[in-house]
Image (tube, rainbow, N blue to C red; front, side, top):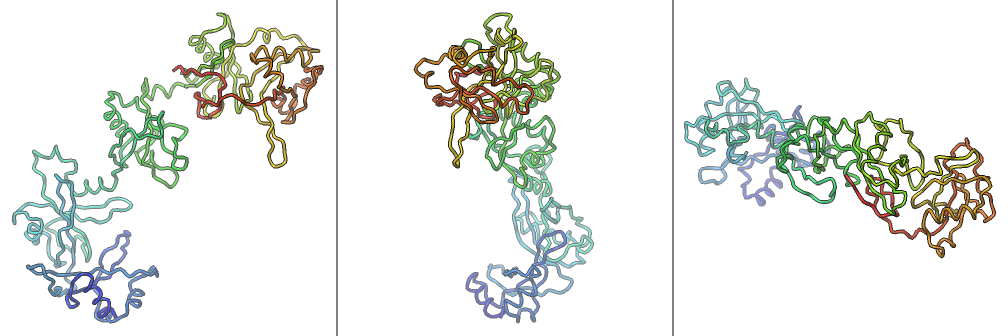
Length: 515
């Protein structure tokens, strides 16, 4: 029985005598808030807890939620709860202090539905410790989700007219004096609740150090793009917020997303933080050398330049207008690197997993070239390739090893691929001499290498007397790039993280990075 067993348990737990306990049923309203709705009737108090749960719980779960009303006298000891009739409304009150930015519960009152808030102002001032005639403002806290709804109460309108009912929450406050308003962030209850609802601590990391928090800012989910970059610029003592570029966080990989946020392309901070159904609290930032709107009109490509003779790769960040061509990129590279001779010609290659997939034509526009997943490589065009004879062939040469997996032998490419001119009638012995000279491999090591013609991943090993060009006669076959001369040897080079892009390929040469 509610009136016996449960009340006795509550008395033991909270020290409230059974005769001074009054329980209320909670109700879910149309706006999805929960409020104490009405006291239990004497008949309901006679039910078992299980039966009462069936009455109060439309969700049919195992919970019974009740509100325990306790009235206390002046000595703070429990006293019998007051009589309640249909005219009486139970209201809860919270006090807001704008200077402390604090909203706290201060008590509850029964009021007459025909009464007016102005009639209870002295009681509210007493609850808050204000002078009896203090001027205060009242607000009804209607809901918090999915958005805040908090409306000012007309102190001279009846509670019934304002549609207040049992369980409603009224917040009140003193109005800050005009001289202190500039120092106060949230002048009234609605603005404070909006702040509480939307506040978001964001941890900022430098994009080049994606594992380390640099600083944190308290922001609001409804802050605009401009609000966010302005706060970041202030934190970094940067005069121009448009030089800040932000990149979202991938909640699954715990890495920056591949693409940064474009200038004013999102409305609010929340849009920057949402990743599928999760909300991140991390953003990555960069400080650019030019404003982001200007940068977005440009295309930045990360290109690895391989010198004709030096054993060194140079990483270049080439920034040009989006309508520029590959030829413009190559001309820009010429101004940044040391060439083997002043009239050297360059070409731009697309490399992926140690294979050459494309030679970019000089007239191709750079806007759609992707350097995130493909490696862009620039190199000088050797003189022998410029003067090919009718029966010469320009072939692909790749390094490879063989690995066994599930009873199958698989070819694994590695290292730097390259082109090689082979002449009509040239044997493998002749070709090997030129390859060894090009790669500068010591005799002892080179003697261990094997050479094979590979088509669609299947190696056919070559003898010293085999004419190499005879294997490369077909020109227009499907998957022509998959025909290559393979150099089989162990991969003994140290693996270096590929600095030019995010695809993490490896270099065998030392790397210099130029911006």
